[in-house]
Image (tube, rainbow, N blue to C red; front, side):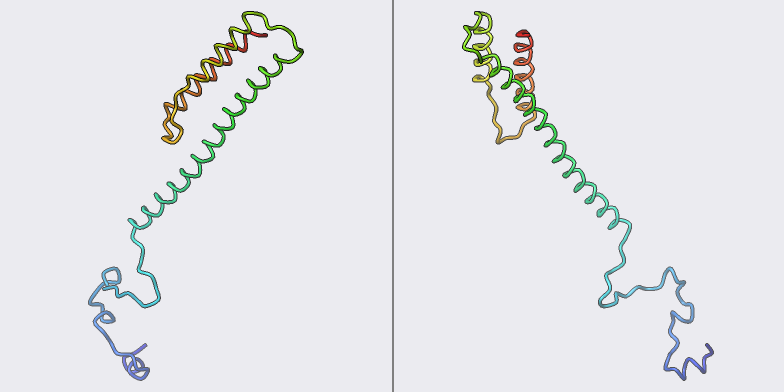
Length: 139
């Protein structure tokens, strides 16, 4: 457009039109209704927030799978103990001793589930491992 046609259309030249500022250095003024341009820092914050949300979901999935494994082990132990009790037979003395040991181990487990500590989970794992060792000797 020429100067005459710009004036005819109601457009006035400004310092920006004159090239006073290169395009990359032009002053930016926020336009109503449009969000401000996002900076690389904004993208980094958003990406980290998204990754944290993904981590939260992953931990929930992981915890659910882990609890499922522990519950499966407990169910297996319950079935073994109940299966051994059937038939009304008299228990051999070593089996009665094993059951007393298992009962003692279960009753002496000291954990605080409300605190959600890993060391309490480790105590449960160790207990289940010990109970499995006792039951394996029954076969």
